[in-house]
Image 1 (cartoon, rainbow, N blue to C red):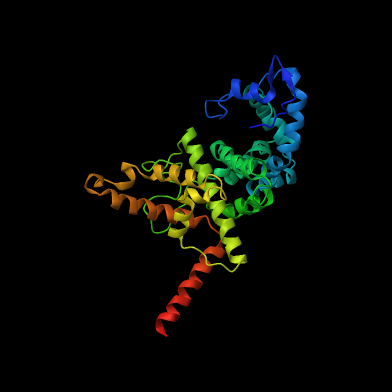
Image 2: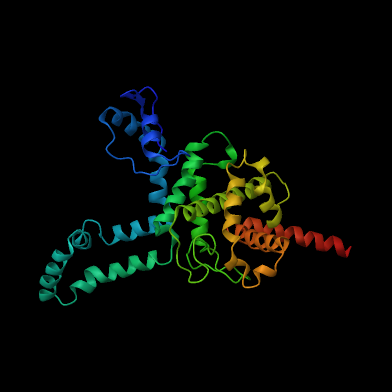
Length: 324
């Protein structure tokens, strides 16, 4: 949501009131794009966006590794202002005409100037959540939560540079590939969060965007907590205990929305396809154990190497004590 000045009035309504009443649902969530804003509000809206959103939003869109890599490739090959960009800006009809004219003079033109770059870009985007609109919306929500909704309220949340470091690590580890597997588990990592269990197709719905955002949030919270606990020489929680920690309402003041994130993601796993054909024979306790087991494994998959190293050290020390 944009930040509006309550001093700006038009037809008896402030800019914030205008936005909430005309563009949001009962929960205050935007359901309609903000368009055709009355001129009286424009100056305030533009200034508010520049101050509160532009800095961190540009960082996300330009410095997140998959985007910066694509921009670097485009600049190195002069794709934006060169032949490729000019060609892509044309209508399909004009593309056919241009292609025929160029091929008449140079039979390798289409392959050299167009196809090789299309293939390179497609390869960069292939199976990457970073280039799916539903993930991008969730990612921006995470940035907004850290840099706007709770900015300055809790230093544990860090800032946009911490968010970028976190996202880049997920990208480098291959965690934010659509087809990422979850070791020792039958379904892919993103199954029951954002892809269907039967065909691995992406589900596009607001509930799915919410689950992606909630998973990113818990991964980010878990990463921050791991680093903070390590810096303070505190023990690192096991994946089950960490999951329980974020499921508790008492911790949502320090880690905003963590309990709601837990509930929404739990609900995504709590389905017949997850339990399998014998679901009717299972007790609720058995189902709960299954959900928590997978949920904790998914949570651990998105945490930094520091997390697994710390747990391995704890286990090693426990083993040593057992033998003494």
